[in-house]
Amino acid sequence: MDIDSKLEELIKEYNAVVKVIDRTGKESTDRAYGGVVRMAKGKLQEYLTEEIVKLAWETIGGNRASLNINSKKVTIPLQDSYVTDIADKEIRNHIQKYKVNYKYKLSVDKHVFINNKFAIAIECKSYAENAMMKRILVDFMLLKTKYPELKTFLFQLESQLGGDYSELNPVTFGSYSTLTLASYFPSVDLRIITFLKGERRIDEPIHKKDYFKPLEKEQLRRVLSVMQNTMDSFLKK
Image (cartoon, rainbow, N blue to C red; front, top):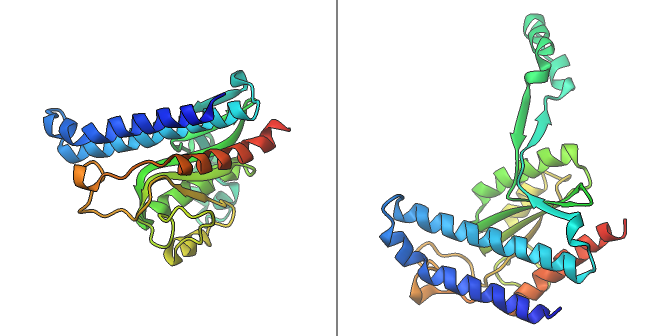
């Protein structure tokens, strides 16, 4: 398999989408400009993510039929300990009686199943900042109550998390605020991967010609390598 050609195809797709987002948003009559832009970038990141996951699996010798990527809702049940700790007996008994109805359903953008096992969960963002990070961490924490061995990732086009997430160095040290938040969710072990170099600037959107950021093949290789290493452990099981 010619990996370079596959990565070049992804870069072409990225270029084609980003360069028409501005015009598409302006021409839209169904949605506001900002909504069109956000949706296009979000879908672009989801597309890049899924293609890289598929490519990683194929290049380590994985059987395509054993890989399934979806975003189906996962049911999170009510915790028994919460019910038993309710002081009001009437309320406690009511919840116990109807406990089967108490549930919360959630999903992140990409659920990667390998041999029917939920192996990797990936949240995809056009960019992330720390208000979003709180929600992301909570969602992954809830998923890991059901799937403790789940590998969790945030894939973002740009970063607004501070620190060095946008520098695309081989080693990322993170930011003070993001890692502080992460420290309260020790079960999650979230890995954050940024695709485009340079911190996101609100007044310098990448879909504007003057602020366009290239998607570099070297960074795609790094992302691919991360996924190959992560998926390799499941290939051997």
